[in-house]
Amino acid sequence: MDGIQNILKFLTNQKNVIGYSFMALLTVGGERLFSVVAFRCPCSNENFAYGLVFLLAPAWVLLIIGYFLNSRMWRLFTGCCVNPRKIFPKGNSCHFFYVFGQITLNALVAPMMWLSVALLNGTFYECAMSGTKNPHLLKIICKDKSSECWQELHKVACGKTGMSSADTQELKLTLQAQSQILGWCVVSMAAFFSLLTTCYVRCRSKISHLQMKFWKTYADQEKEQFEKTFREYAARLSGRNLKCFFENKKPDAFPMPTFEAWEAASELYSFNRTQQHYSTLHRVVEDGQGIISEDIETTLDFVDNRAVV
Image (tube, rainbow, N blue to C red; front, side, top):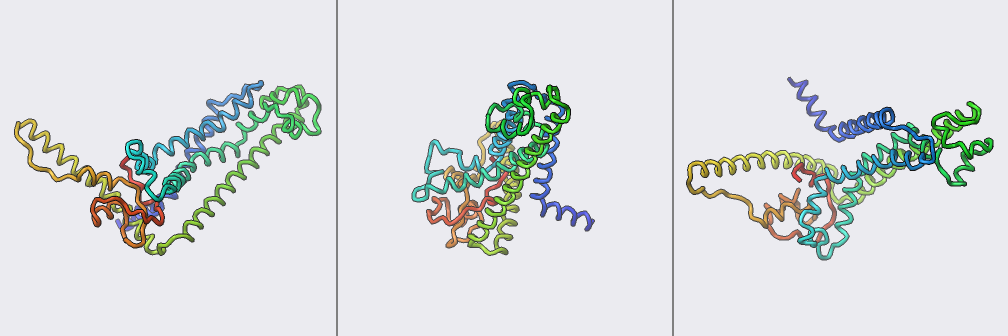
């Protein structure tokens, strides 16, 4: 029993690593499925557009899905047309761009994985570049090749050119090598940028490492209790209403947060050193349902990552 608990505890502590690993496996599997089942390079003048669509369109779709599934996205934009001050608070208009930047960085993980895997495989890039009409690119690709390379480059992906098989294979390998070089560049830049932003955020942090660890634990516990309490209160309220409906009697009073309390608790959390609150809900409970102070120092994204959207 202790062994099972230790395994569960380890998996819980490593949930981010496991999540990203699972996402990477899905990306690799999806790319291979697209390459084998759906992708058919036309070997015509449409190569460039066809290859780019398969290379970039899935990344764009994954970016949109990343935005859609991010709970902070909807906490940020819900009601913003009715009350623009929710995203552009007085005296701190740049706060929106900071929060939206954090959301965008999280949403970019899956698209960057797709681009990396697709470029390392080389199939989409090979098809796209074999259809290019750019004279500078053609000069680089067809360097030291016969004049047929300029006219029949679009047929290289299918191996149906009038060139020798050695030249055709060399062109295919050249395009695949270029694709893999770009793929490793994307991986390297993404890793470096991730390290750079993490180091910058940690260096600018006004919270100690231990307090940050406690804070994350609190945020996880609050999220778990929040969802459990949501279900409990929803069950109690629906049960009361159904009972009163079928028994044809007036309902008893049922304590619920006010509209202002819902609004205050739904705002994105912002840390303030003068008040040691660990979440927006914590602030609402401690200080009431007033407007968040404009003295904002930083934003912690892990505090707002609830499943309720």
